[in-house]
Structures are given as C-alpha cells and as structure tokens.
Image (cartoon, rainbow, N blue to C red; front, side):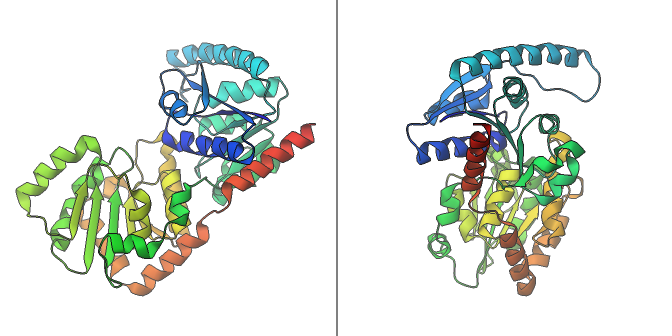
Length: 371
C-alpha cells in the first residue's frame, strides 16, 4: 500500500498526521508513506526527523476578505495543485489523507482530480476554512467532536464519521499512581498542572502569579506551571520580586514529561487546542480552559465550550482572565470534591480511544471500495 499524507503549519495538524503515518508502518513495514507539506515549514523540520520521506509544494493561507494577497494565494494554490499532481503521478498513492492546514488544500484537491480516494481529518469543533472547502470533494471526513457536524456544508453530512484525535500512546498507558509518586503527592493532595501550549501563554502567566501567591506553602496543594521558553526569564523575575517559592510550587520553561504531569494532575489549566483536549479527555482530568483569542476563526473557544457544555471544564476567555477570575475557578473545582469527581467522569466520557485503528480501518475500506 502507498499512502500520501498531508497537513501542516502547526503541531495540531502535524502530530495527527505523524500518528497515522506511524500506524501505517506498524501495520505493514513494507507499506510506503510519503508526507507532503509546505516549504520552510514546521513539518519540513519534524517529518524527516521521524524517518518519513518528505516533499514540499507551494501553499499559502487564504484570507476571508478580498485582498491583493488573496489573488497571490490563488496563483500559489494553482501552482501547488500542479506540483501535487506531479507528485501523485510519481508516487502513485492508493489513498491521500489530509489533516488540515492550508497546505492540505492543493494536495487533496489534486488527488480528487486524479480520482484517488481521499480522507480528511478535522481536529477542532469549528472546522478550518481549508477543511470546509475540501469536505465538498473528499470521500470521507473524520471529525473529533459531535458538535463539528453542524459546521460542515449540507452536501458533506453523509461523509462525516466520528474518529477522534490520535493521542500519544504514553498518555494513555502511563500509570497514575506512579506519576503521583514521582511528584511526591499524598492521596488527598491536589495537583494543579498549568500550561499555555508548547509556546506558553502570556495571559495565563500573568494570572497564575496571584494563584501561586495564595497557595505558596500550602501543604495539600501542589502547582506545576509551565511558562514557555520565551517567557520564563520575565516570569521568574516578576515572581521573585514578590514571593519566595516554597516546595509545593514548581516552575518550568518547557514540559518534557507532559504524560507524567497530566496523569498525576487533579486539575489542568491551559489553552484549548484540539490535541490538548484529546489528551486531557483520554486521561479523564477536569480542566480550566483559556482559549487563545488569536487562533484561526477562534476555533479554541468552540473546543472549550464543547467540554464546558458536557460538564468537563470551566472556561475563562482571555479578555476576562486575571488572578481573581482564575482563583475563583480553581476554588470552584478543588474545594468541592463531588464536583471534581463529576468533572473527571465527564472528561473521561468524552475521551476517544482506538483512534488510529478507526482511521486505518476507514482508509482500508476506502481503498478496497475504490478497487
């Protein structure tokens, strides 16, 4: 089998694509996988490191408003389609899978023109513009939230299937008791794990200082906050100006052992990226979500509201975020054990499992139907 995978721009598109690529190779090491992304991109760095062949095509983001840039984007997209057709002719894939990002547009559309079976995956509640357009052409559209259905066009509804977001295996298999032992937590201790995505979140960094001040030295509460590498020095300078940290507070610039921290946590505070939500629901941990306002089409708020609606999370918008509102939300959760347990159960109920197997089975069904 020959599989062409495309998607990129952010880790939210690249990580699911890599998970699918790895699943294909695990099922049959002799199968061929080609990853197509854009030039000088994050995927152009990450994919070769994971051992997969990578090729680049021209791609550019399409803005909603009519601008001169959009005219340039149309020409870039046309060039990308031509380049994609050439790659498809050379590679001869049995199926093309797109995981989102504007680079997947020309590649999946080229596959459609060549009558190659296509599947696209949408990680968020509110689909990106590329996937909404591609849903008209793709054979199957995999979604991760039931709420996403209403945002796709009518002629795509019959193509929608619920698959979920692929989650790292170590997130699912890690042992909670061992993780809590690692952080020296007693059974009744509350562990709060706070992070604003891989790059950090300035608004969360500013708000968490008041939380740290309140719980600093409190024996039954431990806080682990991740600032993001770019923000660490400024954060520590501000913190050290006001307080001397006790042992129950830990600050990191980047979290290399996220599975352990997630597994040990009682409450997660963070942004509402699709992969973050997939991981916290796979484990079944309550969350306080702070959607980043600058994300494309505000998709993080749609993600966060989906969990809030199911009683698995509290949501604070960035415009409302400060030390007082964050403290209030934390107290609402950790000072009511019944609510904490209910939120954990609701979070676990929303988790998607066996995702790679569902996606792989759908891919095989598409290939066999095409034959």
